[in-house]
Image (cartoon, one colour):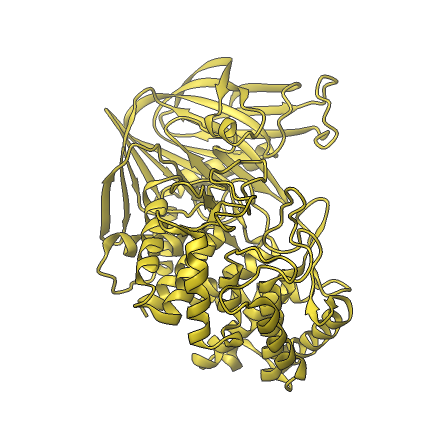
Length: 603
């Protein structure tokens, strides 16, 4: 398949054997994720109402192979042997505009449900014609055959399709679909019956989605009647988002613009920044805060400030951030510390650009200062043991457990993040002697002189040392960092251009991604956000000495983004054994850290 990512005149062309998907969002929680054929239950058209994500369309099926994908970020086209399809989602609207190069027929396949709801019984569809629309009503009724107490709610979804020249012939048949990626990830169910509603004939059509019939019809007609102006609006929005940098390498230039669009596309004024699509559509503290510096560099100071203060008011009684969108609710220990690291970045950017008075009132500054003092005090009281910061099991970004490996205790990046909080306290209030004391103890107990231990009682080599160097570089001298990383890199380096999440000689190292089974997740899998962060750290320390690693990481991240997985978006991770697009299809912090890397390299 030929894949073209095209943004503002820059273009890359490449032939790849791998099937490539594409995604569009409406920046309100809805998205369209499609492949040449459905590979996952999480592909199709999804919409958000309130805090719920619903799937509506499974696929729009034309029996002709895809030859080319053209991604212009605000719209995507698929060129088939004899026809071209174009997809567009208006900003903030639960609708999809689907256009064909000529009048043709396609099958409308549906799989209406809550995004995680895989119940199979009690599903019914009714097709009518109303107000010039094809109107499909889906009803989910509880059935004794579905023994799933987590999803016991009955609900209704409406899909309206509107066009000036639309014709349709009901099919009303059920088809069994096999999901290749779900099987690969061991994510059950691998098969599902979806509903072939009708065969539609038209040139262009607008779809509207809602749990309310009137709203669905209104959305469809709104998208249809305003399609020209809505397209201009979205195209102008994308043009405003993607910065122009002087980058000679076309692929890197396009990947950078795609990353800017990805971070913007996964954010909204209501729901914040989604962690990843299609599975992780929630806003999670750690993920959102790690992404925040990219948002700041994009000039979205209003949204960045809103996110910062949202979490400032959420800090729990023991100064941890509860992840409210995860059930059962869990605590993010490092989330609180990342919050103040990003407050520091935000304030530094305000000072550098002369915007402090515009975005920060005296009351804001007082609140930040007093909150930071309270957090430091509570961390010392509740989360320090034998002179080091400690966390509970699965409270860091490496939040899975396998054979007792939950990273409980004193961890290297947690020490560095707390030191960064003490550094900000020094800037805003006064120096705490604990900063110097803790830094000396960390250097003495975690740095062996050759490498960094991942934990106080865990000598394993992991890439979390790169996080420490990123958030608190003054922990070591430049010479000491270089020596330490020189010794660590061979244990973690993957020749395709990434770092394993644990020493390749460690007994827990797993070379291939194990999907929903967390064996490989933080014990081998290579994470794109960490790879990009590591390249940034190496660039800051000595760009010439580490050029081999920086270039390979940059190339791997670029290739995955443009030609693998979902074109224009960075995936969550790759197997250690070879470069693959795996995990969550579109992960926000992967794109955000790519932005940070490019901003520094091409300043």
